[in-house]
Length: 437
Image (tube, rainbow, N blue to C red; front, side):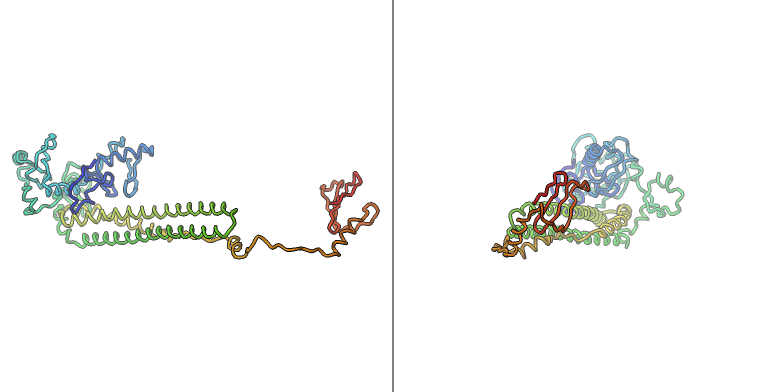
């Protein structure tokens, strides 16, 4: 895991692992350019593979992009060491340690000894104590390396450019010495002789990087990243405002529902409970969607901010070569990021939770003043006498005026019924009876 730092300075965000939230230790970066401690990303990879029961890859902890493991080693626990080291971050960590007078001799640390460093080799990018410095000068291969005094570097009297020498990502043991203009790729001697041997425009890395920090390409990339940071910030603010509006609207709806509840009968409590459940579910669903949008936009914003910090840092503190390399890493990601942001923004909708009382509820509240009207209903005398006369009819001898015949036995013919004014008569043919209802 990473080790905590005492002083935040200006590069805390750039030098902090997003998994353990501490200063990087052995920084490794993914194809999406997000950087993590080797031990942190190793633990994450192994855990992801075990939980998902997959071996073909894993997702970036920050932007959730899938990192293919098909071309990696078979064992997931060996994927992290095979990831490329972020040499720029490593150099920034060295610079930070030098400024704090905390830099230890790199050679002594290999022997598990802690000795305070006295000098810095700009070629090997390593710090040496007084004794190791002597040994370093005695070797023919390193005798002409430029060494800087750390005390002078701490005081600012000696300029310190990070990442003067860069290792090849394809061949970690080789140093980048060339640049292929045809493919816009840095090359070591192996790359130049193997992969780019047929390319016509291969020049030295120093010549290719000359003036890159003052070029419109570098300033344009920095400006574009700044614009994306601002744009993503505005979109995130809009999404958060929309989320707050949804929260407020749901509270207003709850208040309105409560007001309606006090105006209707107690037997509508069940309907109220159902409505509130639906409201809570809708709020949760909308909240999840909006938070997903905010999360996705935040991941884009985080990526852009990281790239912006890297570009600004390398423009201010990095070498020409490092500036070129960082531009080559970040610039291809911009078009992909722009397309993803455009696709996401196209699908963004302004979401509101709207409540509309049903018509029966509003009509009930507006029109119903009581359970009903109580009145005295007096039947007319003529109607009463008519009913009495019908009651006295002798159905066995009298004539019957049939108004309607209903077959209640599906054509069986054994039973049928008729209506006579206010009476319902059933005839049972088998028993030769007439039944009055």
